[in-house]
Length: 351
Length: 180
Image (cartoon, rainbow over all chains, first blue to last red; front, side, top):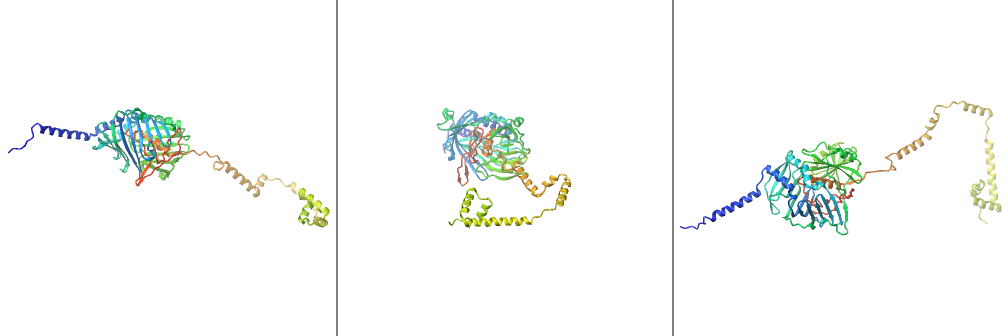
């Protein structure tokens, strides 16, 4: 009897090749330890400063019975130049936004208007430094497998609130470049609040300068917003500038801390803005002592009980706004928490 | 001639209550018209008779009685705050009180005449936009991710207007439906 046997040289080579492929695949989708997850999270925050790309991003925000959606094409050249132009919805089609460092130019093609504004928080290093420690302190980053997003292998991390055990966010991080390619955030009841995902993605350094041109087209109106200062933690200076002492919530969810405050003049009214964060979620408390109430435009606010008081509530996507009056202050609370949590926070604000 | 004056007109003429032009016309007419002159004379005679009859019914008080009345008036001592008591009479008090109440009301801030300085409203889109800007403090905030825009219902999409964001230091009212 004679059988055809493979030569002794080719069989081991084939086996080695298969084993190598399996190892690569495993490595691509290997879940890091929780210690590695924290490092991976940190790397993803800084990734946009070193990675250039062109991609198409889809974003959906969900509220109780509505959904807001956009499709945006993005050109990003590291470290800090970005152009976003809208493909959808139709009302924004053709509009585009140029960001250079901390300055933004918004081109509204319908109104033929360019609005220039600056926000120091667009600086990743400044923003991350303020709240990254809060993020590490309040959330566990738990590895959760990986999948292919926009043709790229990713590692996903679930961010779980240490106090409530709730899943608050999940991110899919490019295994190679560490860029966040997909992200989901969740309501307190576990339903999805926001979902963003790159549908197309190409890494390239070759993005021409004129893509980021801020030349104003003929006939366009130019508007320059007042320069915004970086928020401060000096409440005494805020009190002096505002002319009144702002009130703070006595009851905040665990992990939340004041991360900044500022004073702006809006329609001639001195308005204090207090920002609270737990590293992942943000609350804003606006206050004025001039009795200036909120104009909700076409939205019809609903009444909500705030302890012994009554307030007005509007939901916009995953964000809720509650306005009310307390003694001499007119207040507005804005955040992505549940309605019940926001109402409890609002009821604890006592001037 | 058939343009006689009425009896009422002649009475008014007799009492000097006509305007100068009418008075002149009646005077001229009466000088030439026997009928109106006779009517005028009858009214004058009647008036004289009535005044005479009224005068006959008047009685003069006796001098001694008049003296007693005046003596009693002079002897009456003035009451303390008598002028106040006079003001408290209803015919005086009510109009005075009403006038004071009106004055207090219109002078108070609750009055519709009081100039109001209501604070201007602040568009809710301002608060939303500033909150979104501060969310960039979140290390995982998508700095290249656009803010939510139009409302897309589950049964289809609906377009809405773009909100006006802050311009200069002021904010124009806008809807919440679209935010950049």
